[in-house]
Length: 314
Image (cartoon, rainbow, N blue to C red):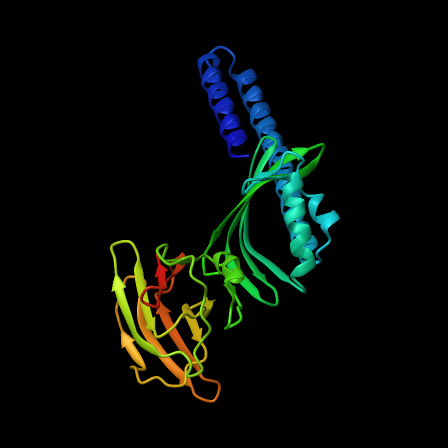
């Protein structure tokens, strides 16, 4: 639409320059032609705007329908929004369908929400970018998704999609997780010290998890919080947005905690660290209060050698 408008403006500008040159000899006729050109530009502008608005509405409608089919776990309808030429995450159309078919059968009830949808169209190609929130019984995440689309026979089809997580994907794991559950940990971006990564995951001791220390470490382009304990653990991590953004880290079972309730750190991203023990359910809650009006990208790591969990924010 912008390109069309600029082209029309250039056309009108060149036409008016030409009319000024002939104005001395054909003033009445020049005025008449000038008015005609301006009317033509206005009419063309209106048609361009209507067409672009219609295309944008079509893309938006397709994205929302795609989201609805995903939430309803209707695999046939869901895949109907993808192009046969689809490629993403090393998978083609057939591989993507197999992956999603398996997930639809094992995820249970899910909720998918999209906000801040923006659409850009150029010729027969479109890009839709939005914030996506996904929740099921054991997994939740939020981030930015981009759908690359192509107009095929009047219908917009997805040819690729990319995902950029804003928070840690949180998946519940049994406390006595066997070695076979390592894939589940990997799926939530949990990285383990390579020198010990083949060792089996040990069960939580009967005495519970003892949190030895919580330390803040700022870097030039990121900030880290290290949580040292007596044993391996998988925390539940949640992100809360809004005027008071924060990351909540829940660790169970923790029978006791004598650390500081509030520790100001005054980082570029993290303002302070708060802790609170719920003795009845043996849960230690660690809250990282963040500075508002920032975009956060988070990774988590576990170093088995020292039983240290690290959360990285950038």
